[in-house]
Length: 78
Image 1 (cartoon, rainbow, N blue to C red):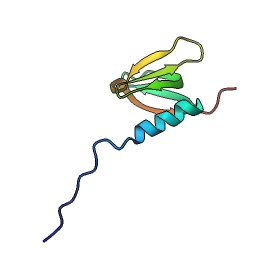
Image 2 (image 1 turned 120 degrees about the vertical axis):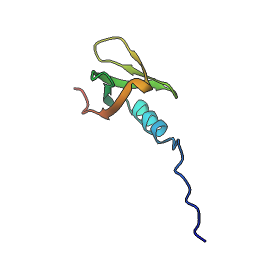
Image 3 (image 1 turned 135 degrees about the horizontal axis):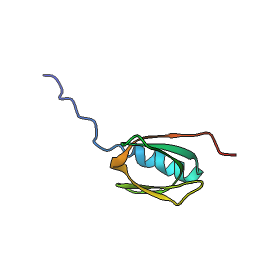
């Protein structure tokens, strides 16, 4: 009899570890939102639903994770 396959976990906590590393190292990131807008800054804090991004030349942004399409690391600003 074949062994039943197990499903992958819904939550792996990889996102949490990655965001924690970005916040600790103050790595500059770009975030593409679902509406196509791209914002730049550094991850300050986050939880299960939000991400606060400190911008270089403006106030910090509180972004809902459901509004984020993806983010990527950018080269350090001079």
